[in-house]
Length: 427
Image 1 (tube, helix red, strand yellow):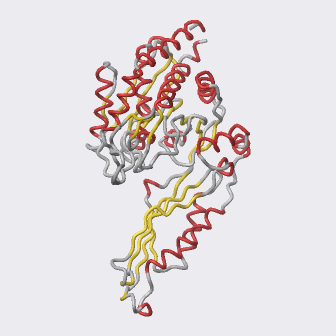
Image 2 (image 1 turned 60 degrees about the vertical axis):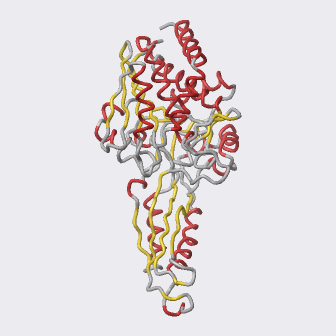
């Protein structure tokens, strides 16, 4: 394929996106309005929004549903010549929504106001998943120009660990979904490309005592006080220093990476090299203010960066608990996993950077995510997998939103980058 042909195809793709602008915004709004909180995890209505769009254009796909209420979409098509296999991955399920406060928007409104689209899960990650579906749609029209294969995976169990989503596909349809590279639109901020994720240890600690009337504390220990002391000791985990490979540390220390982290994540330069974090996500104990609690439960999410041994962290937690025989630990195995990392200088990184520079005038540096994503399943198999998605700062908030222009930029970037990856071997 000549450069003139490539240039003409890229112009055509951008013209299609611009011509469909209002339809694409409406598609994302309808996707957001189809509530898919996980838990409980029923994503059938939201999945139908995607399958209706795919079916309307006659695109190849099928449903893989190990759980009836959690269907996954898998679609593939071949290009006109042999070549590389690119996988587009996104998830359909989202965080549960908080109960609306007076004056709040409906969390499932999909409302477009002041250049933003609002709703639970629009940032994490219906914007990115919609972009994958849209890119898949446009590239199908040009399939004879492509080399290799393009696969779409839209899954329904990312928020609860992937047991019935990406993990299930990788374990049961590995040859179909593994590919040579994976592109994902999880919230990353348009000023960065993410090439690695932290690992996690997620667990529940339960303290049990005899309990007593609150006026008689000499009769029993307080389960809540024990849990508070444990929580205080767990904070020391954040002092663990990552022993990160030098080439990764050097990439993250580039001035562009530092600036991008500060601007897109709303945090200081210290987060360029991610650290261990400890979040007390849920805490519950006691039945009445004047009753000394006989049970208290705490759910904890520990994020573990590249260069920190997860087993060492687990060992430190267990060492802390030796001082608290009243406390038991239950690990959440589907939410506990090692960190993942891939090549920060691959051709897909350069493709993404080139396209963003052309479209937006800046060149996004590769950095490590503070959270986690399904891309880990590909990286664990040695496949390069990258995130490029919208601003992450509103995800999980009552006013979760994406800017319309940012959404359309993600669509353009994913569509052009997938095209470039699947035509790069033609020159």
